[in-house]
Amino acid sequence: MTTIQRLDHVNILTANMDDMIAWYGDILDLHPGHRPPFSTPGAWLYCNDIPCVHLVEIDSSRTPKEPQIEHFAFAATGLPAFLEKLDARGIAYSLDHVPEMPLVQVNIADSDGNHIHVDFASGEIPS
Image 1 (cartoon, rainbow, N blue to C red):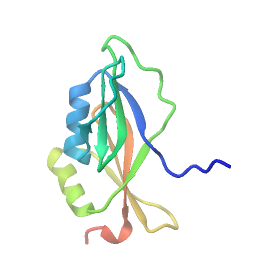
Image 2 (spheres, one colour):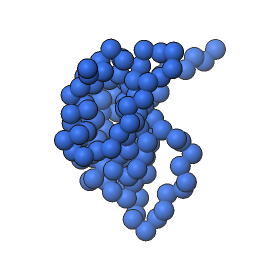
Image 3 (tube, rainbow, N blue to C red):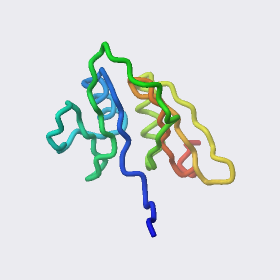
Image 4 (cartoon, rainbow, N blue to C red):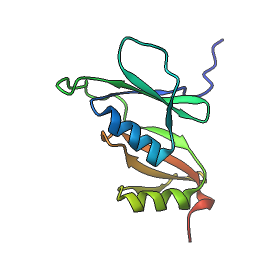
């Protein structure tokens, strides 16, 4: 029997590789690490020792297919510092409580417009 244990990574096509690497590094503290020598250019962005965001570079004249994924999410700690960072960078966000769960989601978009939410324990909400 196969048991799914966790989301391994998300793969994003982008014509804005440098901007995307910079955004994920600055906002989510994910940084490039080892990536196998695939025939297409790209970057793997790491959370601790897990390459969780895979970027694949496409030519700017090529339009990616319409996305079939609405969002992806990260669990995190340090909500006040994260909100301060978003405010300082002028990044729009919504702070949304998850019904019947002690979670709050910070909904944001990366530099290509992909929807991400970062989940924190609701006890971290600043007073």
